[in-house]
Length: 273
Image (cartoon, rainbow, N blue to C red; front, top):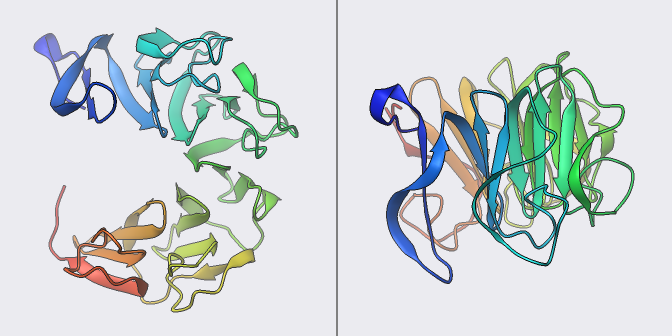
């Protein structure tokens, strides 16, 4: 996050749409921001006071202000009823927030049950996800939500795969959510994957979907961070090496080709933050 005058943290954004902005511009009236999350067409910001602010498309109630369809939100608006929040995730048209007490709060689109409340009813204001406590990290895809619990297990509200605890996973410290595939980083530096695999996004050398089991991504160790695009996956190691695999139609893997990779390929070495 960029720091403004007096050490205040500000937010910047740019996008394409009806009124395109091709260079970053400060989001006016929003300071004290510690993290952000972006869905398809909406943005969430977490402020240092634990409040959550939203703007952008409100077609499914992404702003959490008890309204949908009628209007989009063109300036940051506080999401009512949320205090003490420590992390955010946004996927597609859904929004999720993690509270300091380990509970998870969710709102907006729920057509696939991604909010985890046992229904497919959109929620126009935040609701607590029932039965989910002790959470330390979140990730969100367009149709599902992922959560890491204190014990290193993973919970999901996926419509295409597991419901509840993901079997065979322990010691997880981070998650990443693609369109229909998921990644988990373990404390031992290994990466595990499950879900759709049509483009090799699971990295196991095949295009076999893994909807009912998780697979270790071979050839990766010492990984410290992971990320997932729509149909591709990225991992970075402590030594600054970046690995990529999956769809590559637009050169998103960075290997100089547009050929999909079914296993991780090294694209950057010695990278530092």
